[in-house]
Amino acid sequence: MHFRKSILFAFIAIGMMGCKPAASNTTDAADSTGKALIGQDALPLLPASLICKEVRGPNEDAPLSIVSIKIGDQITVIDSISACDQIVPGENGVPKDALSACGGWWAGAGDYLYIAAEGNDAVVMAGWQDESQEDEGYHFKELKRFSRVQH
Image 1 (cartoon, rainbow, N blue to C red):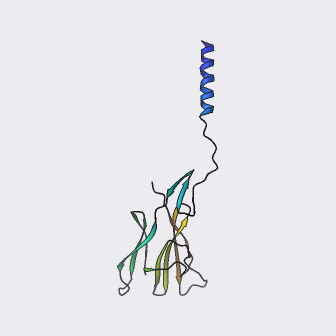
Image 2 (cartoon, rainbow, N blue to C red):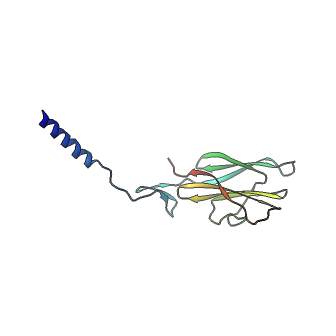
Image 3 (cartoon, one colour):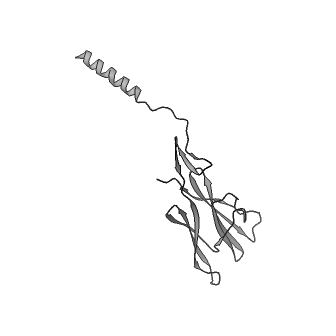
């Protein structure tokens, strides 16, 4: 009986060693064609853009616009800003490679949003300027991050 248990244990041990996953040196990233690399398989990345909807216009006491991100068919509200003009990448501190940008200046201050492509993610960056600021620039910081990989 002891001999049978030893043989059974040996077969289980050999079987488990054969099932060990192979080491992988791949990482998840996006290649230059806009495809997500997951292991060896490439998946298409969904397009990402900002949608700005004016709630109160600039002729009212305090203009208000709601900004959403659209990734594929999914729309998610991300922030509210005063002015909601479409911004051309490369202007207003927005990098030239931004996927989409909006914002603007109202009553001595400006709010700006853009989407940066980072690997498989769409990263929403938020910035601001004020006419009384003592430094220069748009103070962009990461606001939110969304996956662009189609599931």
